[in-house]
Structures are given as structure tokens and as C-alpha cells.
Length: 150
Image (tube, rainbow, N blue to C red; front, side, top):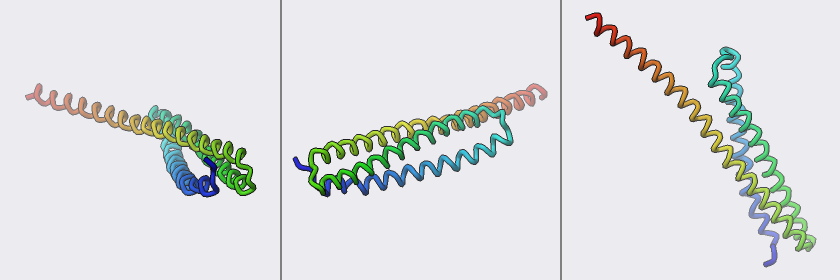
């Protein structure tokens, strides 16, 4: 099967949309970091904030690598198209494989980053559950006092 000029061109829209999604993730994480930084400066001893900051630091690093692999995939697609244009078919095939491989790596990192972001949400939920349990136990003890007094 011979690689045609339109084949790597098909990846352009997919890679562009993927890069847009990665950029949106980065902006969302950056806003979360700014908000957590403000909370941390107000109360530096809160463990949940420290755990969230560690989680977000890991996610920012992963997003950087996702974007890097996405850009590399895009660049390899352009090189592949040029190689097809100058009729260097065997080299173009390998460059296209490289482009697909870097796209695959980018998507794999994205999957891991999604799993890590779920851990961050679970940290928040656990913190809320702990606060709820504390409030519930305080209310229980308050009502028990009323029953003993009567």
C-alpha cells in the first residue's frame, strides 16, 4: 500500500482538536493552581491543599508531555507530506509511523492524566465526607446531651 498525500493530512484536524483539548486542560489546571495557591497562603497547614498541589503539579507535567508529543506528531505529519511530495516514499512511510506513534503516546499520557484528575476529585470528596462525618458526630453528641438532661 502506498501512502498518499491525503493520508497524513487527515491527521491535521484530529491533532489540532487534540491540541485544543490539551490547552483547555492546561488552562483549567492553571486556574485551579492559582486558586489553591491563594487558599494555601491563607492556611498553609491544610493537608488537602498540599495533596491537591502535588496532584496538580504532576498533571501539569503530564499535560506538557502530551502537548509535546502532539506537536511532534503534527510536525512529523508535515515532514511526511513533504517527503511524499518529493516522492521519497520509503522514508515518508517511516515518518508517518513515527507521527502515529507520537500521537499514540500523547493519547496514552492523556489517559493517565485523566486517571490522576479523578484522584484529585476523590481527594475532595474524601475531605467533604470527613467534614460531614465530623459534623454528624458533633450533632449526635449534642442531641445525646439533650436526652440525658431531660
